[in-house]
Amino acid sequence: MTDYEKFKKLLALFVRHLESKQSGGKDVPPLGSGINQIVEGLSDTSYGEISVTVNYNPSSDYASTRCNLEWMDGDNRTGKNVNCGEGNSGWDDDRRKIKKLYVSQFKDGRHEPRYEKEVFALDLFSPDPPNDKLKIFFDEYVKLYNLDKFIKRNYMAQIQKHIDLLESNNNIIFTGAPGTGKTFIAQDIAAQMILGNVDADKHKQSTNLGNSGRYKLVQFHPAYTYEDFVRGIVAKTSGSGVSYSVENKTLAEFAEKAEKDKEKAEKGQKPPPYILVIDEINRANLPAVLGELIYALEYRDRAIETMYENPNSTTAPKNKKLTIPSNLFIIGTMNTADRSAGQIDYAIRRRFAFVPVLPKILDDAADLHNKHKFEKELFKAVSELFVKNYTETDIDKLIPSEHLSPEFKPEDVWIGHSYFITDDKKTKDIRLQYEIKPLLREYLKDGILKSTAKEKIDKLA
Image (cartoon, rainbow, N blue to C red; front, top):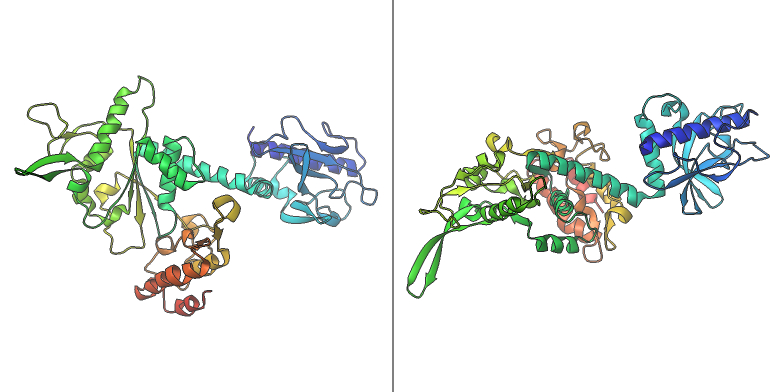
């Protein structure tokens, strides 16, 4: 059973049992009266163990917060409960039926509700799979118990989803406004595929990726050429004069290395992955930089003729072949707010899967490392210049702000969460005065934001 299925059964058992006890009925197996009971097959989840407490209260019988589900930390109680609310608030007027359940934290002698949902909406007693409302209820309960673990699990599920897409398509591009963490995600994908884990210490992770020999990051720019990226003629000077030779550049060199490792892999074994991250991929003239490799990006493991001979060829004369092997994966990042950057034409676009990345609220404890802080209120104030529903994670449900020009989509220009991460050096004031406000004023000048946003930008603090 999944965590959701276990939780649905455990919650249904808990509700039926309390209602039976409260109306004077017999115990509903396997629950009796007592604290911290463990229900075999239902209490164990991938996040931890949930105990059941059924405790009689002389003043309210079983209609009290003494009866609850509770996350356990080993043998210790955590005070993080699901219950029927303070003062019988979750029961009907006759205290016979439970109408509402609460996720709450026991603190300073009382239960503080954090989330609530009507029992009928949770659909506890049907044979159907857990519905979305029950899943959200469980997620809220997990977040109360272990926000760090919950966020990491959800993030890793997202990373795995991207890996699945990359392995099926070989080439993906993350799109989004500046500061949305596109390169950050690309590097975490590489770490998971090459190193087998994502490290919270990004400096350490970057070092380990570099040492692996199977990871490269290049940044495109308007002057970048085919001869910089694939193969080109290089002039070398010596005492006798100048000589010219063809050299493999980043892609050809990396592709040959990946192909050799692929050939070494035993039959039936998965060859080691190689990851090439191309930052700001749309800033270069892509058709000119890629040339005939547009074909090779789609048809992996097939040799193509390039403009220059292969310097490592053993044939005479040297051949011009280049193969992009199937174990070389390309991840691009694309800044959608930069109108000066070139657009990607349809032929190249067909070879890549495009993944939008939206700004999001970060949690100081779970998302950030080394005493960094996320300025949530500032993020909210700036985000409302672009969208009305800044907590939305579905790109198709974003509602543009009245301050955003109708010529622009929010997901293309809404500045990202990394602008709102501060520490001892990059304080909130430095971020705001020298990074955020100048960018927003540039947006005003370029007509991305309407003039109505000027006053709000000036008042940001």
